[in-house]
Image (cartoon, rainbow, N blue to C red):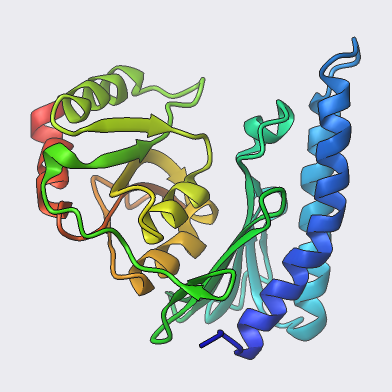
Length: 266
């Protein structure tokens, strides 16, 4: 079965159009690494151009929909029923350094619930997509989470902290505690792809603090439709777009949640 709903088709077309420019930009970023010209401004323009293409394509079909996106913020604030949640380049630092571990991430939210989503790594040509009730897919092949049951056998992935984080000590303490109780922990630099990789069984679980909604919106539905669990812990109600996320194959969920519980870390 291949997902073929209007929303999925629209998101897919937008991703493919934007990715043509991203692939070209990525090649130029690699060249800039060996020159004296810094690529920082170039990445900013790549982010904004990708975002503009995505917004333009989505608004052609649904100009009335709301949009929550990393660069432009919230568009059409009055429409909270139907919203696109967009991260034009999740893994910007990887992109900046010529590391092919970044993705376009788009989720579609209806009445506060993510209904479908796409995460696309244009360099590896891997497109993860899912729709509520219709499963999760990688390049048209059905995906499922891993079946690993023991936390000490689990391969996990995490991220953070950002340079300006005020809770670095907590995050590092948490990392040490978790890593002492599992097989290995990896850090790849793209929360969207981390969640997609849990969904297809490459990792058994993922957790990260201080994420933004656009980092994880598409990953939420992809992972759930692949049979996984997604949890939010210790979130600040005053910052609804900032999330602390736990996502697993479901088998190790409660044990991992116990390892990162607030009372154990602080």
